[in-house]
Length: 226
Image (cartoon, rainbow, N blue to C red):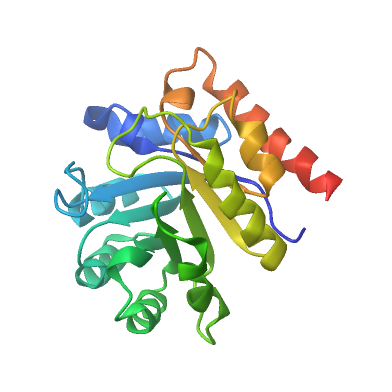
């Protein structure tokens, strides 16, 4: 499999009053990416952060800022997030059926990496055109909980989507987000996920570095079996 493991602590579970030091702490523990949840209070009921916080954090880190846009109008966020220093821009397929081609183009024009996310109730076939396009997304995020809040239980039935994606796209970055931790990582890794978002299971651990290392090793071991 031509993809590498990427462990992305979800900063939604961090101490927001100390975001820069929390980011450094996660990177020191071995994190590959930092996952940033951007919610508008409309597409999902929760309201979190936006471009000003990304801009502030960027001054303190060179890390890959993996931004997940849980917003109704993702195209409105491309320019401000590009200016702020976001690295990845993952939008939801449910709100971009009419303009995903323009959206991908704009994201790439701002030197960000485009990804597409889908909620648990959305069929996996909905993302195929975006991966098969001449100007494709570079990652698919399979939500393993309903988006909007941290700390929810992992939905194992979503692994069928991951398995189908991995079989169809052997070299695609496939991310999973929601309820990932030491007890669920094996299910995700064996299905073919290589980008792992985890919040409370990392930030709430006595030894976050051990959790990150275990998740990475689990992805690597399952890739060797393929």
